[in-house]
Image 1 (cartoon, rainbow, N blue to C red):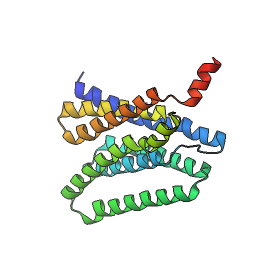
Image 2: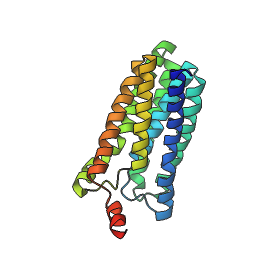
Image 3: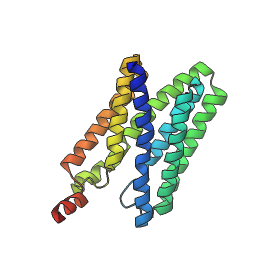
Image 4: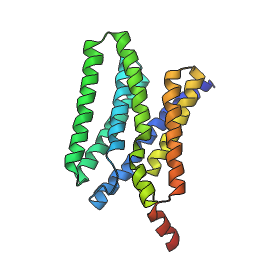
Length: 215
């Protein structure tokens, strides 16, 4: 079996699967009637990143990229909507959502109606790479709160762990196909995710500690 094919498909499956990790988090929003201390930024970063890769896939005419990122965009948008419905800080969330929407519309207009195709491909390639790095590092917005409270309660473990697996698998795939465009953002993403996993190990969630004591 071809190693590139195997690793590529593994990365694709992991990417789609990782986007389902937001479901239990959003179910928690509806169950509790609030978003607690969780930020909307990771969801908006997911929307941005998936949208940029989708546009890039459309420009390349890559069916797999289009299919995978279409699913991811829909999932991330549904998570952002779930957050907005349950958050008490609707004004802040609406402002951030508006910024992301305006950015994506501007990028779409530039890539598909203003720039020539070669320039658009390069531009979207760089933007998608930056979007991936932003998505991988987005949970770090809670870094100050984690250190202050000495609790990783605001860091979504399942999202971060799946991001580490996705970043690592795509980085390995990038090595196999000798494409630095794939390698660099995913290597950085895997490192950022590893740092966040380290914070979770150093500062366990207070809820986890309470469950341990109860046992």
